[in-house]
Image (cartoon, rainbow, N blue to C red; front, side, top):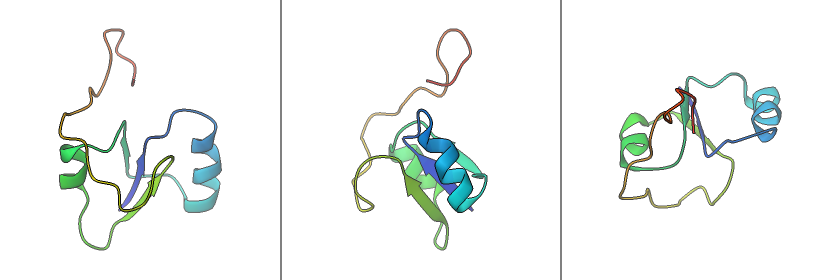
Length: 69
């Protein structure tokens, strides 16, 4: 599986050209995102280091308007 983490804007399109369309998009790197990643999956971070620790608090999936945050 292919996971994109921390993507917010135009960097998404660059990553899609390089890696393909992701199977999962994670708003941020939290414990829930970490649980979704299995051995052998590819994880592409828009910001931060590849070995960053997940945040202890979960990110919202969508905001009040129903859009991804």
